[in-house]
Length: 179
Image (tube, rainbow, N blue to C red):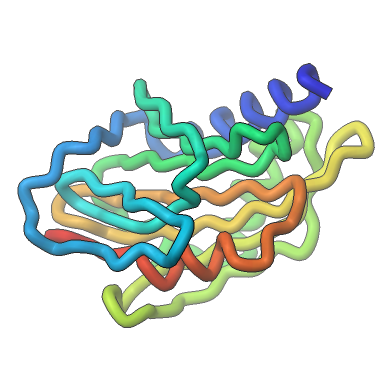
């Protein structure tokens, strides 16, 4: 089981790394506060904020990983790249082809690929990408929220091996651009 969870974590890092390879630190000079639901805490850096489960472990390096320590395989990855409009200007078919190419290189297969342009109470333009992925009888769902903040484009990727009925909605409802 540990080997499988390691593979899933590596996969999530590899997939998200296709889109950005920059660090996300927790420095925040902004006064905007995210109201975290009960049992959640807040991730913030200088550009974005959102709530995540308070018992999850956060590690930072070239990317930020927030991992459920109970071994479910569920995690959140935060990365950024120089501001780009590729997600807004690419068609769903173009984005699906890009993701499929990346997934195929890792041995993963995707299905149920969807791209939506949505908004929440804090952000007018959010690109939401969802899909299911599988490899060696392991299935997962990934939900990506992509937002522009200042001079950067952030991708917040939620990987669920074991579905959590509130995780995606709590991250989405609290996702805030700080500048």
